[in-house]
Length: 114
Length: 115
Image (cartoon, rainbow over all chains, first blue to last red; front, side, top):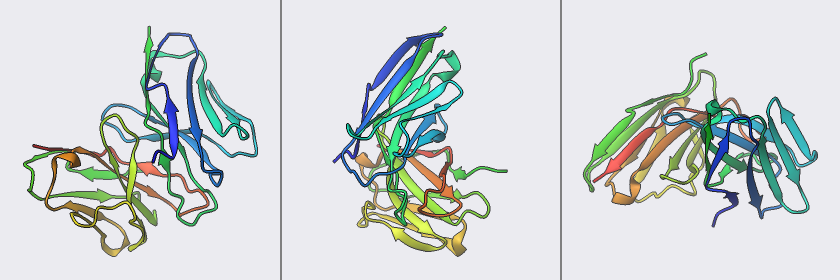
């Protein structure tokens, strides 16, 4: 059972455009929602994360929007650059849990054309 | 600060053979994780250690997979015998603490191909 559903599977964006990746979850106990960026041959690296007590978090060109009632969150990449081409994973965990297990989405392969 | 180290980076074996992966976490990190990442999917947690004790191995196929963390530092993950469906990237991650949420840092992974 997929705890976190992610779409689209792949995304092609022109340089300077906006990339949008969406995720949905079912478990209302989740209270921490990170996004990871993974380049080929590398492990995932934390990009940005949000808690459900805020609706939006922005770090540079990256913004997470969070809709608690809809149980959805999304990553927006403004002014997308070729260097942003990578696979992006959303994830969720129960921050209050002693285990802190991360449940990952299936990933979105982003390609930014110059 | 050195990152999480893993070896080997690539491994090709025949089905029913055995294989072992090694991980050296970031110095001082108490928690170590092993994930399986099948092509086209997100990482799936196999096992989590807190120091040298297992805190979560609910997703580990214990009939063929085993893992240990020696002296609360390095860890090895073993598959014996391997099946075709074990072909995946095996990622090791470490974090300073556990729960609360402590950021997980991932190594580059070991790509396993089972023929």
